[in-house]
Image (cartoon, rainbow, N blue to C red; front, side, top):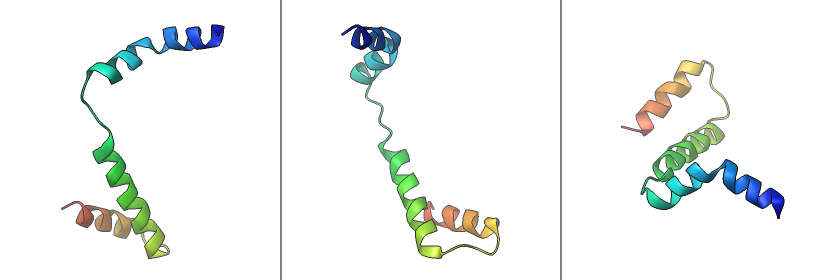
Length: 60
């Protein structure tokens, strides 16, 4: 029980903000998922800038 109380005290500001603010990390999680799918389907690139160009094309 002490560890629960200590954790709540330590993270109180973040818990309060999560409950009161309407921000979401959903859009960012969607971008990360698309990048991971792109990497999985490409089996490597000859140069890293090709990967970055593909990522930019996805988000236009």
